[in-house]
Image: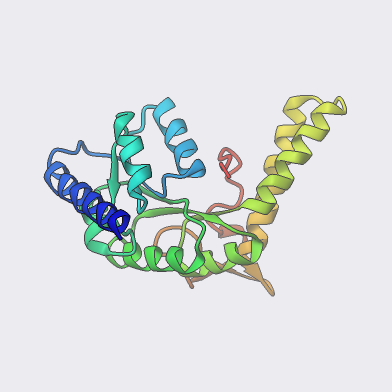
Length: 219
């Protein structure tokens, strides 16, 4: 019971600190939901390229630890639109969802898309079936963990077998684009991707995101 009280007090303390610091937060271009292994790796890559970001998490221990390292991180429930707005949803360019609970992901997407139909939403997906569902909910891009792991394994194997790295990267990008097309398409009709595109039909040649071989997803 004492530990529960201590945890509750710490949660309140972090929430109050968040409220006090929200107005002082510099404008960020990306909001990362989830500060676990995947979220922290994404933030490291954004930082390397000079893109300002904000992290969120519902675990007070993670939030406290990241704050001690100087990370811009908020404690709260990203399913709540008021929390998302406090974290900068009104002005960010991209929402990056790295949590792995499907129901939570769906709620976050719905909250964000209602307020920002133009927003780029990039989501960690469990597998191909999950990715297809996420595209129907209106995400810009979904990254299936199982498929990305397979592509990375294929890339390492081809390089080890002596295939030139340039050819390997090109073939991996091509395969990723084919798979992305499969996520969108069914029976000759494709679901339009991108901001606000959930549920719209489009010709196969006009699917947003297909052919975009410059992007390499982090899973």
